[in-house]
Length: 113
Length: 114
Image 1: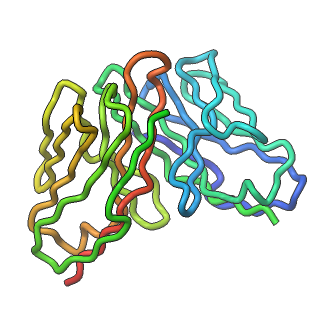
Image 2 (image 1 turned 90 degrees about the vertical axis):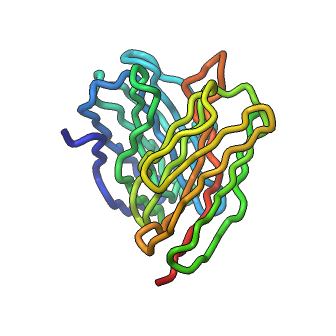
């Protein structure tokens, strides 16, 4: 049972490049989330997926797209990266039938030059 | 809009001391409140989750309390150890509406000195 996994762990992009951050969970959770964490700003929700087949915007969705590929996988895409998207990105999932404890992945550290 | 505040932003204590971390929230209509620990360069690990109907939860040396009406929660750490050094975050989930989202505080950076 690996929990929530994220790839890659680190990435450096040039402005305008695109990339997809991958997230997978093996806990059979329905809901999955993407956050970004910036110094002094705390964790902010980018997008979430309450269940397979649905996605919704969070607090800071501009510049991102998501795909809930199946129940296990939830990807985050940056179509044209900007320096303002330099951040640490966390994927999370919730065990909604087990008290709503949220489980986090180890994070992806993204730098956009 | 729910806002979560954590005070202090940083705390340094000697080993063995008992300590309290504070979390306050502006909208008392919450579904639950969760305390997390984050080690440097790592993801968040859930420590305790308190449902809105509960007053406290305990796990080992950790005790979290919730006073919904006053919009406050505290995390009590007994007999602190250097291994407790980390950032502690609280997060609330609102009740009603789109209750899938958590609102996080910015965290308290705890340093326990040997």
